[in-house]
Image 1 (cartoon, rainbow, N blue to C red):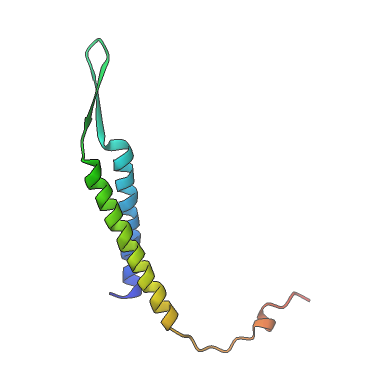
Image 2: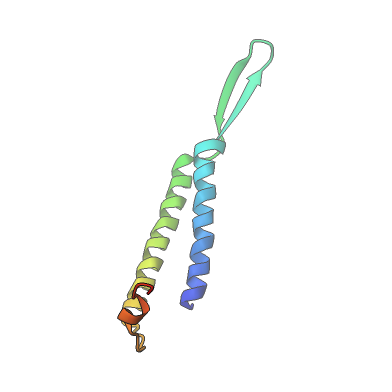
Length: 92
């Protein structure tokens, strides 16, 4: 996998984490209001431990992928002549 491919995949994983976080905090329960007495029944729809486990798994992937990209960048050198003083000098 190239660095660019990995970065695109990481973006998709971040989106999935966002979706799972929403699921964990909002949609993991079902609220039902029963009849005229307005009794509210709350039923879990997903096992919060399973959702949390998946989020942690995806976060660990992002950590490892980011580390590999940084490691690759640390090993890659660019040869380029640059006159920093000329490029960053104030306007006359």
